[in-house]
Image (tube, rainbow, N blue to C red):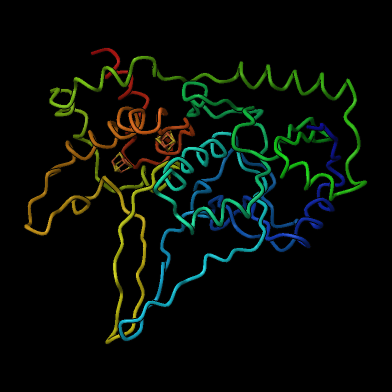
Length: 337
Ligand code: SF4
Ligand code: SF4
């Protein structure tokens, strides 16, 4: 796959051309928050950012979506017809999270046509992180600030230029379509890229001990550790809603008379009603059981089911928890048991 140079002077033209051919989503500032939104002009792109507040999962697995409609007992299918899309400016941790979501929504025997259609129609252009945040710990989670995994194209910010590396045939196709806007990378550009990689990795200051974590958790279901850990948790669910890999949902029928729709909505294991049964029994009565579930799901059950921890170390749950619950501290506590 090729390595090219895009000058920052040409960045607007690059985005304008993409906007002509694709629906383009990129980090945009809205009410003080950085979110992935569709852009109609290059000027809408946020100027400087580390990562978005919301992860990109909503672009593949919307917060709320109608799966089909019904009228007088007849189902009317919702077609997952999506336009060709580009997501520009994703970070490598979020690109990796899409690989994990593929394991859930595009598994043998469990195919989600809505998710799969969006994945197939989307080209991911990520930007390597030159300045990881203090809350980032992706290198403990099987990825890195410069990882290619999950991206179709990876950009490296070299100052006045971007080094543009195509990772997949889809990415290469997009680059080929841009014709003369990109020039071949020179040896000096590759050297600068290598420097950026070294610096970015050296700046990663936060880590969690994931080695042997699953095996530890196997024997900790009834551990007294959970009695203490949950005490400050409010059960607000922010950590799960902002997590790029959390994917629990609920399905409800919304109907008036004989017409309605079947809707899939995000849900959260941190909510009391998540496991309530028709009899009224709730096996996860308090935050203790719910928080244990969150940790077990991410670091134990996901490894059993998919061979991967379901955390990419993006740090969103650490930055946004209203009571400063820090998943890194909990993992450390568990590993010391
Ligand atoms: S964001 Fe914090 S307080 Fe809210 S549910 Fe998660 S851990 Fe608990
Ligand atoms: S658990 Fe926290 S750090 Fe890990 S991927 Fe989810 S939001 Fe990011």
